[in-house]
Image 1 (spheres, one colour):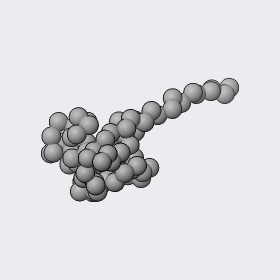
Image 2 (cartoon, helix red, strand yellow):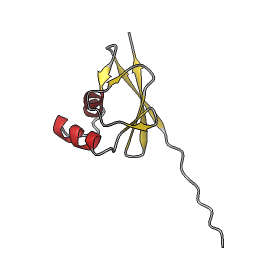
Image 3 (cartoon, rainbow, N blue to C red):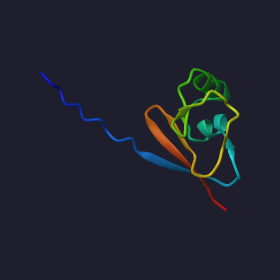
Length: 82
């Protein structure tokens, strides 16, 4: 017996910043995905966050224009506005 599973496509949300880059932990706080910097540190070090499709454990990782962050099965794209 075969079972067909339909996987929902992940939606991408664009988040605008007005600086050249933003650190990963600050980005998670900006998006209200974590409650504090300490919470951000824990989820990043536990490997729960992906940057551009790869697990990232560096909380100081610099995110630039068009980088994509995945957390809790949602994708957030960085957009630098000038």
